[in-house]
Length: 149
Image 1 (spheres, rainbow, N blue to C red):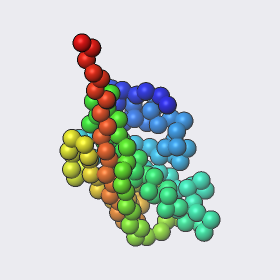
Image 2 (image 1 turned 60 degrees about the horizontal axis):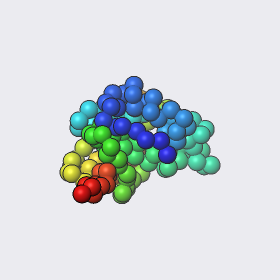
Image 3 (image 1 turned 90 degrees about the vertical axis):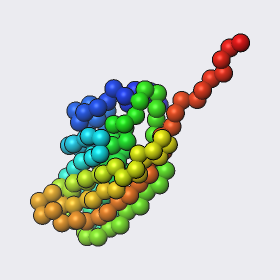
């Protein structure tokens, strides 16, 4: 596992570079906006994101939202801090077969150990909402070492 100093990653270009050669880039997810309260990501619907029934796979939608929220949390981390998603929920509202979908994630709660994000996932062209998503991110701090006597 590579060590990453998230405190030095603060803009869209750096975040997309970090995602290179990962699950995120495999799906084609791109971060398009990041700030203290919002993270926006998009995904072009492709054969790789589809379920066998010809509709976008729910896991693709959930992965887009989890990625946006994860990068949103990453924006707040200090040196040596890490994070992990500890809970998520997706409500699917409509199906998609083509185009690009966008996730707008908003920070609802920023505590010392937990961040809670709400997201709306919609079609880029029509703005039709296709899913709602909420997740909780746990902030992990480095272990304190005992001082030598």
